[in-house]
Image (cartoon, rainbow, N blue to C red; front, side):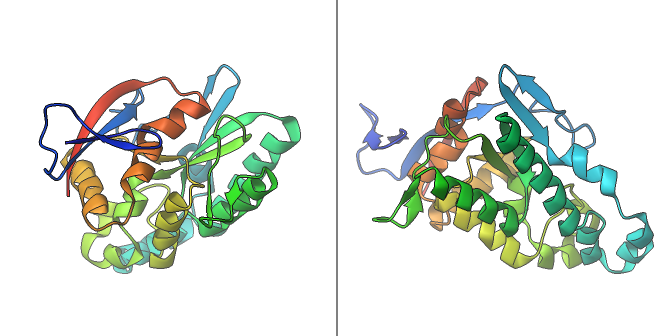
Length: 244
């Protein structure tokens, strides 16, 4: 079995050198088991502000199209429109940079948000031209972000079959937005994969990400633990076993 560290993978003593298993450490917040209907509230941990887009975006709910959603479930994405999310994100982002307030934004879903962050991280010198990826020290930037695992598991084309079962907030976005989230995780811009639950669906999805090389093992280790420690989060630690 191989243990994932911030910058290396080592075989665990007294385990099979040739097995196909990884061991990850995962940081889980104390409020991990809150239901979808009771979202993580905005928090202030010392000098770190944590902003949950759930709380902000629900203020912009588009009631006018709810009846249409019953017939066309994919329209749920516009109940909480991308343009509203981007406006909220931009305001939080600019406030952090203007006031110097270290801010972590939870549950981004849009490529446009990541591109804003990319430009900011380039200005901080985090871009590595030799690997065409970012290598941030997450203790430095004023803005860091999390992607909700449900926005990685599902995409807009799944609304037809899944309907209300994937009516999350922030909503599941279009397929190209889903692909963008994977892209920016692997390019080192996204700091964390947000999980409210650490159950079978979530763990199987993370297994699949490793097996199908959607996320590299070292990268997954960072978004599950090591990036968060750099930001300043101190949460309960659990183990995740992945077979590939």
